[in-house]
Length: 412
Ligand SMILES: *Cc1c(COP(=O)(O)O)cnc(C)c1O
Image (tube, helix red, strand yellow):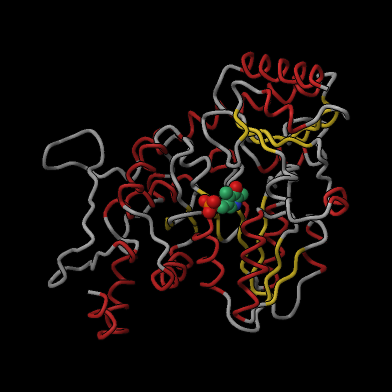
């Protein structure tokens, strides 16, 4: 089939583009409530057996002659892929969406869809580590220039715009200090200079933040995190206008980062409880942040929901909830690594956003490549612990942290 496509070239591609654009309009469904969207939007009706859930279509080979839509997994247009995109688009208040096999597949495809040799991208200095590596290691190979901002205020972005800047990427709240960037201000800056803007919305999830409402062009997710939510799915997503998604889709076909339909189906199942999970996790995070704030063995808490957070007011303006990620510093003399090993319920784990609570030391993971001095300059001490708050009862999490701190002190 692929060889066939090549021989037909542009004519077929045009047909594919048209059929991809035939997705059900999402706007009509925007007035549905959050949990209703999570549960129902994009579900595939089982007309044959009237089952309650979407069937899985695992075919990699579909009828070719006399059909409007030439379906193929890598064209991102199998039934399960197309339908799940409706749910994601609805949640992000977007016209359209596209899903990938990982967050990095979403990011790399998004970048390469819009950038070419000689272009410049301007990116926030506190991006996810994998994104930083992609930008530094891959973009120069394509002759694409990049600048990391010096800070995360809109002035920091404006300062570094060049005549050839084509793309701005922000991430808010950011990892691991939960800094908050002014989404509307960056979107406005981009619009005024004719620069596309994108946001990594992974930490907030669509439940706590909808950047398209603030004028951002593209919203990206590592669906491996909250959209999946059970630490068992690798996936990514981008939501935007149909015009933008069509461009990403075009490059996506060439790069091939599609998701298997089995996983798409699992992701659909996970997303039915997205709002329930994230709201419970967000409420827990607020309770845990307040508890940690009052804890005698904890010195600093970074959570946008706390009034003490630098950008608390901004977070209030642009977030529906403050999210379920936070970080805190243990008092000096309490070894952060020993502490993590003493935890019995909370897992020490590299990833985040599952229903189970996890912690990690950023100095060992996202910021491992920096020197100790560079880390201190960006506020990452060895005492800092990033906390992905799950759905457990807060009292159990608190007891676990207390016993781990006590044991760490005893072991000294
Ligand atoms: C995990 C993550 C990514 C990358 O996603 P993968 O699914 O691991 O490829 C990108 N951005 C953020 C904020 C993340 O947490």
